[in-house]
Length: 120
Image 1 (cartoon, rainbow, N blue to C red):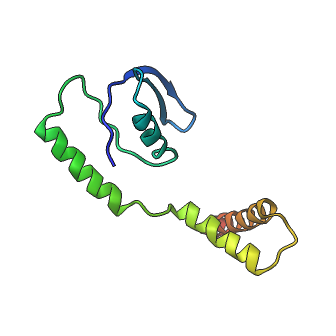
Image 2: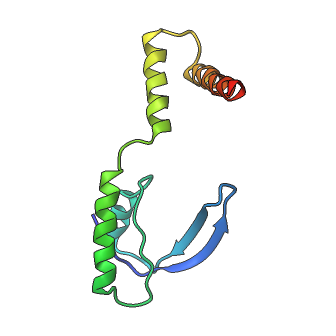
């Protein structure tokens, strides 16, 4: 799905992890476009900024990047690990809340890695 709309870059803020937060403002939009925009919520998207028409070269770059994004679109390793811990939590019928269980398992895993570093 693709949406093209005019927007103004209103603010740029840096974050602690070095990433940026961009804030855009748009003119009044059709209700259907507004509804379509909500489909992008919490999804990774590609963003092209241009002050004029999009050239064929830019369109080619977008197409290539879109293909690459589809190739890596699965869950991150941390998301997969959290999901695996959740399944273990369920399987073990743990008396802990999942938040407590997850913290305990992650602390244990981190300790194992740190021990290996000390032994090296």
